[in-house]
Amino acid sequence: MQDKRQLKREQFTLLTYFLLMTVLFLTMILCVCVGSVRISFSDTVTAVWNAIRGLPIPENIAKNIILNVRLPRVLCVMLAGAALSICGAAMQGLLRNPLADGSTMGVSSGAALGAMIAIATGFTLPGISFGGSMVMAMIFAFASLILILSLSYALDRSLSTGSIILIGVIFTMFISAIISLIITFASDHTRSLSFWTMGSFSGVNYDQVKIMGLALLLCGGILIRFSPELNAFAIGEDNARHIGVNVKRVKLIILITVSVLIGVCVSIAGTVSFVGLIMPHIARMLVGPNHKRLLPAALFSGAIFLLLADLTARTLLSPIELPIGVVTSIVGAIAFIIIFYQTRKAR
Image 1 (cartoon, rainbow, N blue to C red):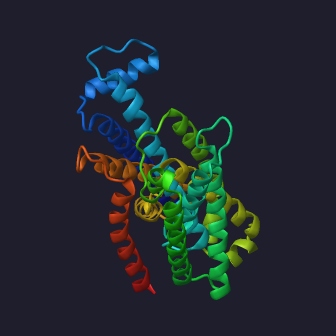
Image 2: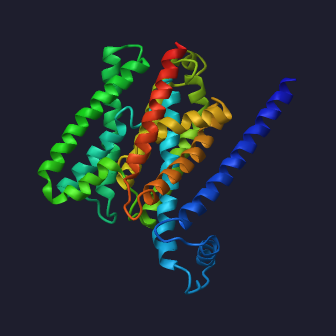
Image 3: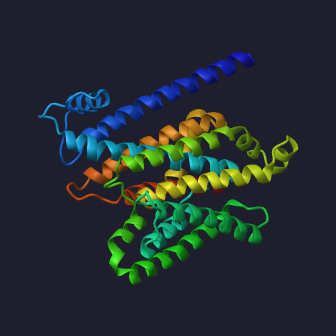
């Protein structure tokens, strides 16, 4: 009987993955086709397929819009959504905190501060146009995470949900004040600095897609590799330690990995809030709490959500483009209240 239940559960999980991949593919096609200039499905498929095969693209097809504007943007949005979502799922599992996320814990704000300091001071890395902001975003993301957890532990040794979220909110407000000061005094970079506070994928190129894809492949692979350890953390650190998990080592690896991935996302798109808070909960409802199934499902669901959010930002007030952070924050704020209420009610 137990084997039959396990088989049915695995079959249901595979079906869920297939449906998520299908929805993701259709959403990508929709996002490439729809915009200020409408492009037909057949023209989109023809342009992309011919480009992959190295064949000439018919002149009546908007080649430049499809291949040089929308396709890199869609790919980058998809990868960023997957990255932010898997980071949120990993942090929630590691901290046993349903409200843990880069935005609610101030990690994204810290990463944005690092990127803005790099822009304001002109810090760059040779060979990579945005390498300076990317490295600074990673460093500040990790430092912010460690600082928030340290302060929370100093105030509450149990690291309760309320303490971590409270410190995260206060830290975010503090970082926002510093960011405002930087924008005020760095008048020459006001436009580019304001970008980091709202988030946008406008103007991304294939170089950024490659870096985002490489970061997700490496960091996402590491997080999925540690899914058994994340399952062990779900029953408590003491129990995880008793079954042979090196708690400190695993914590450090996951925190560094999450910080790197969030730092790369922020360096490319600015602050995009709440993706890592909402989508892991939806993925958990679809495939359950086992991180072996949860993390891949979070990848797909996060990619779909951010693609739809970006499409809304591009088309809702066309030709004006809304910052994508505005769209995700509106949805995320509502979801945050619902999740927080359910969490408190369950106690």
